[in-house]
Amino acid sequence: MGMNRLLHYFQNLRFKQKLFSSYLVVCIIPLLVLGAFSYYQASRFLLQQAEQNLGESIGGLAEGLDFRTRQFEAVINSVTQNIVFKQIFVHHNGNITGLYRDYVDPFFSNILDFNPDLLQISVFTDNPEILRGNYILPLELIHGMQWSRSLKQEGTQWMGYNGKVFATRLFADNDMATNTASSAVLFLSLDEDSLFQGLREIQADAYHVSIRDREGRTVTARSAAMPGDFQVPEGHAPGEPEAPGNSSGYLTVGQTEYLYLRKEIPGAGWELLYYTPKDAIAVDARSIVGATALIIAVCLIILVFLIRMFSNTFVNRITKLNTTMMLVENGNLKVEVSSPSRDEIGQLTNRFGRMLHNINTLIEEVYQSKITQREAELKALQTQINPHFLYNTLSIINWKALQADALEISEITTNVSKFYRTVLNKGRNIIRVRHELENAKAYMQIQLVMHSHSFDFHCEVEEQVLEFDTINLIFQPILENALEHGIDRIRKGERRGRIAMRGFLEGERVTFTIEDNGPGMDAVTAREVLIASSQGYGLKNVNDRLQLRFGADYGLSLQSALGQGTTVTLAFPRYTEGVSLPEDR
Image 1 (cartoon, rainbow, N blue to C red):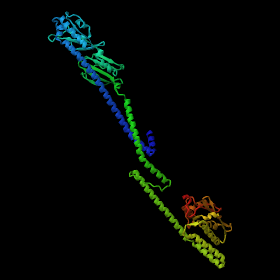
Image 2 (tube, one colour; image 1 turned 90 degrees about the vertical axis):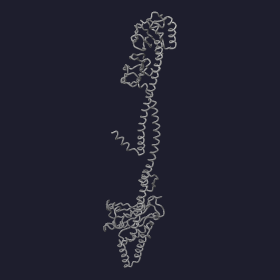
Image 3 (cartoon, rainbow, N blue to C red; image 1 turned 120 degrees about the horizontal axis):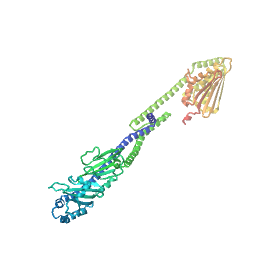
Image 4 (tube, rainbow, N blue to C red; image 1 turned 60 degrees about the vertical axis):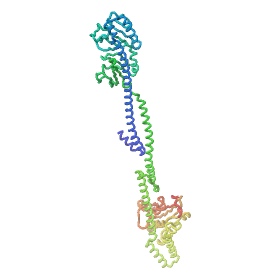
């Protein structure tokens, strides 16, 4: 339902908005995808860099510890492998007191002076001849110490306890079996804080960092506030091979993912373990998000500008064409429509222009054809005098001649002459109202004679009306219609027929009314008189000619009712030939 509403809303948008929205969506989607991919790649790369830098830091710390332990290993070797020391502490040969005074005491003092991390260097021996001092202790004291249990193992033994680091080595003779009853033990005590100073520098970002020996015993450890569900794995991390070596990876405890690093310190047989949450080393995403958002925003601003420019380029021509079509729709067919562009919009514009040109050509042809047709009809009418009327007129002249009444014959002859002269009008369509009225009066005088003066004709026309022009032969058809369908249909003896003609001005209009007191007609017949064609020259023809010449606001109107006669109203503008019509001014 929501998708349908969205599609409906999109369909109702203007074309410019649709084009702009489509461009924007098409550009935003790849831009967002590219931005997300760039953010992911940048975050991944920075995380890898952070892991690499952290690994290098831990590796450097392990190398530093390895170097320090190898230094102390060299010191231990220089003591336990020294022939003189073996002779004093193991074989008990020679001048023990002199050798100790001249050789052992200065040697041990120099070792302490050159190694500030070294808190103590001592030899546990069972030789009773050696004077007890700072560097010589009885061998039986080691039996209560934890590190005494590992003395049988070869090499140096390293261990940590109570903030100190200890290193022990047996003085062994290659020529005799080694045992604690006849051997001496070298003992070194080192300052843990000084030796593992580098651990404090990396402890801030770590949850746990520790050093373990080969047996998995903790030599030293530094831990932050660890979560309650975090347990430092024993030996190696889950999934990590048990064989010693450098390694790294991730492990998940509870809901937290941890990075672990393991580095060997081979000089002492130790391994350095480092654990920290992944979030602690992850780069702050806000800077990346901000940079990505800024780049996307700049790209969007540029895209919006380009999209707006392109959409305006496309839509402006469509808008212009649409505006032109609206002008044509409102009746303005004279607008010029063309486009120099050769694309689809340009082709559409040019085709519309050619179509409009063809329509104008057809309208002009039809218009000229109609005018020609009307003029032909009028000329045919002017040359088509009703033979019956002509014969009757001549019969009257002849009859009057038989009666020898010369004045009346002269009057009839004069009226006939006026009628034909005004009807023909020298072949012109425009006539002065005065002359058209003379034609109507002459026609009615003839009809009065033909009807033996059985009806009355009254004419009242304002003088200023006579000086305007109109089309010819407009009164006679109306008067003829009043005679045939009005006066001639009055029953004999019912009432005397009467036709009244009035002419006057109404603003910019010239109005004539022709009224008869005939039987009238019903409403249906009254409507059809002006819209239906009839034989001869009827009212419809007069109405069409007036509207064709002066416009649809002019022409004839008819009011009639049964038994009440008929009134025809004729209207045309105040027009003089050679002067523009009012609507064209």
